[in-house]
Each structure stands twice: as C-alpha cells, then as structure tokens.
Length: 170
Image (cartoon, rainbow, N blue to C red; front, side, top):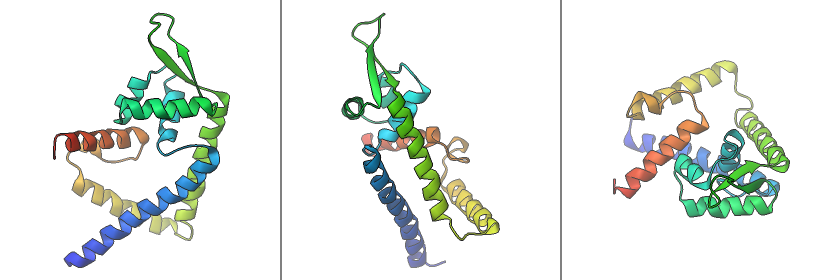
C-alpha cells in the first residue's frame, strides 16, 4: 500500500475523531458541561468522597484543571464539596442528583451519537470494522495492557502515558 494512501486513511481516522468531538461539544454545551468534565463527573459518581488530587492522578490532568472544573460543576449544582471530618484541610467530592441527571443525559447522548455514526452499517460491516480497528490497535500496542475492549479507565491510562512521555520529552 502506498504511503500517500496510508496518510489519507490516517487523515480519515483523525477526521472521525474531530467530528465526533465536535458533535459531543455541542451536546456538552447544551448540558452545561465543558470539555473533560464528563470524565470528572463519572469518576466522582464511581468514587464518592474522592479528592481533586485523586481525580487529577486518575485522569492524568493537572490539579489546577480539576480545581477549575470542579468549581464550575459545583456552581452548576452537579457536584458538592464536603470537608473531611478527619482532616479539615481535605475536601471530598460527591455527585448531586443534578449531576446524576447530566451524567445520564450524557451517556444517552453518546448512545445516540454512536447509533448515528454507524447508521446503515450491517452487522457484518460492523464486525469487519471492529476486527480491522482491533488489528490497528494490536499493531500499535506496546503491551497487552494497552489493547482490547474500550473503556474509560484504559483511555485515562493511555492519556496518562502520553502526558508522561510529553513531559519526559519523548
């Protein structure tokens, strides 16, 4: 296969990612979310009483980014912060009922978007695409922990690895 053709193919993969992010961004704005806040909301929902540092470490983002996002989410009524009774300098985060509603609406949005993306695809086409993309992932994976079965935790782990590499200069 020619180099130019592979570059065009990679361009299409990048374009899909950008187009999907743009679609999500429109929906996030309508729900009162900023980029990256859904991940924070989901983490707090799964880890009630977590700290901003735990979120930052898990998502491989700066503590100041988490602080800014959680402050916005508190003002929007999605999160609440409570002082830890054992350590008065430590604040714990909890999702509110409004936050749960936004989280559910966001998950529903992702389902609608996925259905739109693959509209008109047959089951065999979806299966062939899935196998092809798994093969691309296998080809790029440094170790078996990097691959198979998309989930938010693996994406956070890969983003963390990427940011660590960027900090180390490569």
